[in-house]
Length: 330
Ligand code: BTN
Image 1 (cartoon, helix red, strand yellow):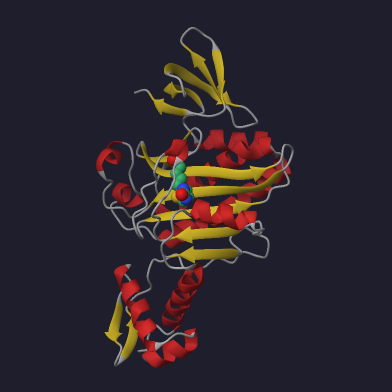
Image 2: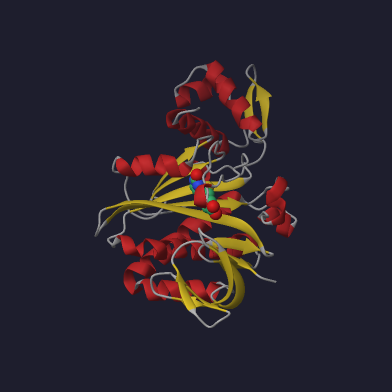
């Protein structure tokens, strides 16, 4: 598995080629600029080609980028995030096991608020409830954001809701689609899932140390595999065209920053209201509620300030869901 420092060198190579897109760059020049041997340059070029980056040329006459690739390398993302803001530091991996695992490990070593971990591919992407997250190479966005909110652990669900709202905004803005949010935080397009969010944290009883928002967005998948076909889709499958992952990611990080600042200013109730405004699931939706022990039918009846969902059962009883899953009943 490549290390982050190898990935940083390949990012540097990409940046160099993007800055000199009109010229053929000789291998030795690239080698000395990024501090590796000529044969390593060739090896990196081959890895980039395998990721779909179009590069003309070979070791004897140099290399030239054919067009700007849709790769989530920090040097290619046009994000102007100030110090201390979400995305001020981005660690980019070509391949890793899980960006959430990387981010949790970094958080335990003191990584700052706003640090972002992003990968082109995950070999062990994790979903909620112990599921696997399908992480096809360079088709999706696999990103984890480290937050250090001055809040109690009870605020964590609201941060997850906020992430759902930010993704909802980002896919609508960047891909021009109409999106929905299914409680707690699946973003849907055309009734199928395009995004899932896995929130993990480390906390004491009364204080959050770090929250990791792990966000997976299906962007340019041409089809979904096997059983996922019925329940999941991608932005490309919904719009019929390729969507810039870089644009979706940059828009997402800006939206997260905006929503996060609003939570600090206005609190949980305002965040729940923003979620409810973006979701058709907040109120009056007939759903099946899946709990750890069974399932029942109900109609949704609004969110509370902690992000819990109220549902009304057939016999009039109200329940408040703090975890679990709901499925629309059509
Ligand atoms: C879900 O089950 O809906 C949540 C899926 C979360 C997937 C993302 S991809 C980036 C981050 N890294 C992981 O291993 N999981 C999350």
